Amino acid sequence: MIKRYVVGSRMSQAVACAGMVHIAGQVADDRKTGIVSQTEQVLAKIDALLKQAGSDRSKLVAVNVFLPHITDFDTMNSVYDAWIDPANPPARACVEARLADPDLRVEMTAVAAL
Image 1 (cartoon, rainbow, N blue to C red):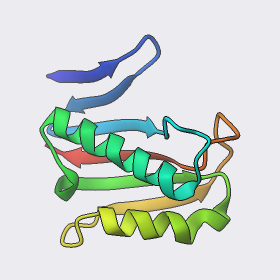
Image 2 (image 1 turned 45 degrees about the horizontal axis):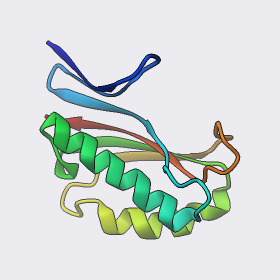
Image 3 (image 1 turned 120 degrees about the vertical axis):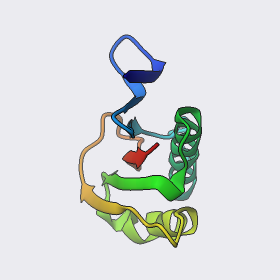
Image 4 (image 1 turned 90 degrees about the vertical axis):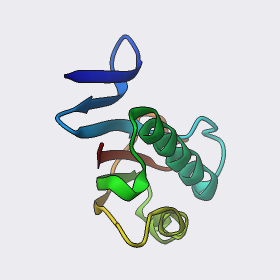
């Protein structure tokens, strides 16, 4: 069975299937803030989608982080490291990438077990 969450015309924000939930790229709602605030907003959105699907950050399997400015890496990590479940850290990749809006400082995708 496939269950979709926050369905839009182009995509769903999360899709649960085969015991996993796949979270689409999440970006900050307030795009005029800095990397700390944007990272906090993105992680809060991931938390909310995980909860809606019946999961939580302790069940994260993988997180992908996209930064348009790799110089934000350490600052983003200071927020991310405080957020993850230290007993259950997911696999993770972080790459420098141009994002859809030049005001975006971070985008993340995630996969978690249900």
